[in-house]
Image 1 (spheres, rainbow, N blue to C red):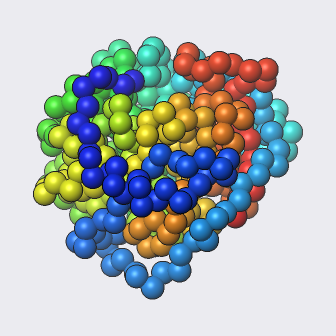
Image 2 (image 1 turned 90 degrees about the vertical axis):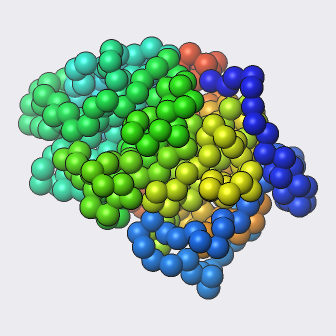
Length: 388
């Protein structure tokens, strides 16, 4: 949700002009800008930025090769099972559905109890335990009547359809909730820790309050405890000053990237470093203000409204809701290697979640049944893309 009062990062306009020669796949000049992180930028896993890292090609490709499934209800989180089938969360119903990778057959696994849908809340992110092959645990981020929380549930395939989820074990509660800005993306990092992107629930001041879990990226153990090495003792807060984070992904060097909704002016792709302040609500976009980390790239909100992101073939791939397109952001180390490209513009409507599959392809969900889109025949759907 956008509001009228904005803090415009005027420096971004100059950066946009420098990139005016870069065009999207449709031939348009995309309204984005990029900014090099400050020299102090460091990867989240502790390794130093490598200036010798090869750059992703300036131009890439993305082609839809198959429609995996159709007829999904408000799909949000998605996780790939070891054998290739998918688990998909329905935001509004609170149900988790298994989708067969071969033929798209859908089976209801069960429902997460306590989910309260409405506005942007409901059953949101899903991820599998790093030890899923043996512990069979699925982690879910969801909205209740009182908060957003993260719980893990046992997935028992031996039980009848619809009854395969155990009772939720809540590992973290008290994330602020509201009709808007609930965040919701969760993922395990290469360090084995669980990360969560949260929103400030419409209360902008929470983003700058390090005691609040709203407007943050959180890092915790699989049991929900503050992870070793976190920047603030006894806290799961990893970075702050965020408006609404719905995209998390790690590159080949283990650096964490996050997509963030702006207000009315600039959506952001950020390189995340522990303990840093990403500016909201003081700065939106590229501000060059001391004490705040600038995004690596920004987009006009009409062309992005970014939700899920994934890393593949040297690039970040970003699903856009209002923009109704898939952005490719080629990387060279901690910077963009070239102007981002847009694919699938207005072809499938709103795009919510993008996941890198085990074979190097991407899985992409549409989001046209979420109350803000215009559902088409077969919506919502999961698409498979070959990318390069």
